[in-house]
Structure formats: structure tokens, C-alpha cells
Amino acid sequence: QVQLVESGGGLVEPGGSLRLSCASSGSMLSIDAMGWYRQAPGKERELVATVTSTGKTMYADSVKGRFSISRDNAKNAVYLQMNSLKPEDTAVYYCNLRGLDDGAHGANYWGKGTLVTVSS
Image (cartoon, rainbow, N blue to C red):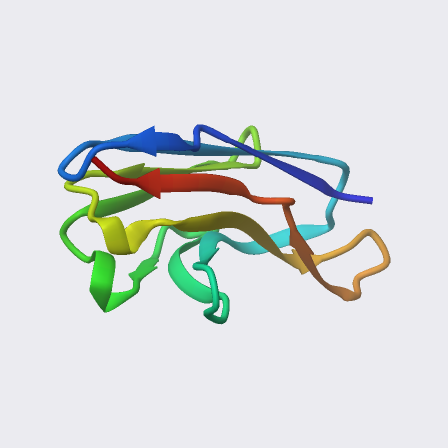
């Protein structure tokens, strides 16, 4: 069973920066992509950024130019550097991992989330 643990959330002032980390444990046959999603109060969970095993990245329009996703394939870890944070970035951020489990079945795992609050 794969487990994902996020860290790095917290309170930051508008314009500030935070770096989120996600560490994974457990075995997978293969990993297609890792990424970050977020859910603000009263809203649905939305994609923030993803990175594939080949390094292809995708970002939500709302974070392009401010956030940067990176991945350590050796550690099966993913990171999210968030700059120029805005109050509307306030949300619980969830790590996601998608791939094939040891039985070669499609698998989609989520972390428990880390809270990011952008406020003065």
C-alpha cells in the first residue's frame, strides 16, 4: 500500500513563498505522474500542477508563472514551490500519485493534505 505524506504548509503573508513536499512510501510497478491538487473552503478539489515520469509538467492557469513543480524520481517525491502567494491560494493542498500497483492495476493515491493559509 502506497502512502503519501505532505509537509510544508503554513501561514504566509500575501506575496510570500512556501515549498510543499510530498514523500511516498510503498512499492509501485510504475508511476505515471505525481502532482498537487487543492481544495478551498466551500469549493471542489482542483488540479494545481502535475509532473509525469518523463518530466512533462502541467499547471492550472491560476498558478502559472508563480508555482513550480518538481520531482525526485529516485525518492518518488514531489515538490511544489509557491511564490507570489495570494489570499485566493488559501486551501488544503493534496499530493497525488497515479500509476500501476504491484499487480499491474491502475492506482490513484492521495495524501491527507496540508493547509496553506495566505493572509496578512
